[in-house]
Every structure is written in structure tokens, then in C-alpha cells.
Image (cartoon, rainbow, N blue to C red; front, side):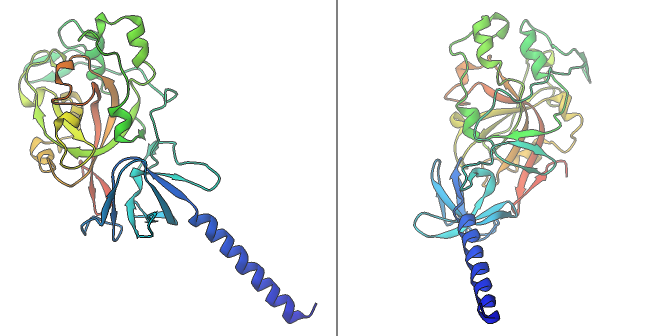
Length: 318
């Protein structure tokens, strides 16, 4: 074989290999796991082109992300950018980004809450406040629920999950409003999931400084009570569609920038927030279903709050 022909053959082989590799990369698909906007660039600087809902499919133009966004193409050939945390990426081999583990500033979104994830026992302590000392179980009869609400341990990492994986997670219904009165079968239904450290992305629908509750010894000062924050999956939705997440005075003591005025800035806005903390079932509010919440599952207490800015998650403490 002549040398020139060999060079041409090698060039053709390399070119074909590159095309094959590119076709494999471009064959990656992404499934929409929660409503996501298609944008003209990887930021929120410009209005969205359109919105997609689960379980629509998009094709990846590039394998990696830019500022948290995937470069994608729709089924009708429109190119744009979609927020990566709202997509489940499927490779040509069938593998998916489903680990859901978050450490530091990066994460992948799991498709569902796994019963195999770690559920450490709550760490609790007395709370010293202006009105005195409130013990780990507060006051009242439902000690098991209050001990979970008043935990003070902070997770080393979080499993980021779709909004609907919490909103549609099952639990005993009807059931007594105090878990201390639950049967062993009812407790077994929530045991695989309660106490997992998770993150969800949504929009703040309201910020409510609660009043007297047994978990906080019946105190009423804003600095001594829980704050209920209904989070919705889509901007503009109301509280009937919300997951309630709660800050507690025990955790807020380490987060002086978690102020009502700060959080209210994002109420009913187009700015997504990422809420992280402990998954917990609060049996006390079945009468609120369909009015102030869509589920009795909560993130309670919240241990981290982030806001989306220019395609990046910024810790509210910063």
C-alpha cells in the first residue's frame, strides 16, 4: 500500500471514529422530571422560549453542562438550554444520572426517594431563648414528632429529588394527628423514607411565622417559633399545590441571614430556590390538605437555603 494512500486511509478512519463518537454523544436523551424552561442561553437573563413538562424527552447536543444548563434540542428540532437539575439524562447504554447525592456545590437528581438512603437518628438538645429553656421534645403528648422537628444535626450531603417525588410520596391517610397514637403498620409505611436528607427545587408561595406550637413549648415570639414556607413546583402556583418546608429556631440560630424579609423577597417570584434538610411526616395537619399544602410530608427542619442567580445556586448565608 502506497504511503500517501495509507495516510488518506488513516485520516478517513480517524474521521469516521470521530463521527461515530459524536453520534453516540448526541444520542443522549434527557427526560424532563419537573417543569423546565427552554432558554436561548444558559442563564435566566432572557425570557424562556417555551416550557416542557414530565415526561417529555429532549436530546443533548453537548454531554456536559454550562452554568448548570444542558444544551438540548427538542423533538421538533428547536435548540436551546434547559436547567440540568430538572432533567434525568439517559445515555445510549441505558445508564442514568440518579445517584442524587449532593456534596459541596454539585449534585445529580434522583428519580425517586430510595428507602436505602441513610436515615441517621435525630440529634437534639435544649434550646435557650428569651422565654427560657425548651427541651428537645417541647411540650405536649406527641414526643416522637417533636423530637424530629427539633433535631439540630446537619447532613454531610443531600439527595436532590424531583418536587413530585415528595408531593406524591405515600403515607397513612387517614391517621391520628399524633404519631404516638399510630399503629405499628402505619409507622412502618413511613419508616423507609422519613429522616432522609434531601433537596428539592421550587418557588416560595408564602412565608408564615407560626404561633404557639407544642414543639416550641408554646412560645410565640418570631425568633422562638417555626416558620412555615409553602414551596410550589411551578412559579405562580398556590398553596394547595405546595410542600411545606420549615425553619426552626434551633437551626436558625446558626443562620442569622435567614430573615423573614429576605425570604419574602422571593415570594411569588420567578426565582427558584433549593431547599435542603430532613424529610419528615407531620401528622398534625390533615385539615390543611388541598388548602395550604398538597402532602403531609415536609422538609423539617430546613438546614440549607439556596437561591438561583445567573444559573448558579447561591447559599442564602452568602
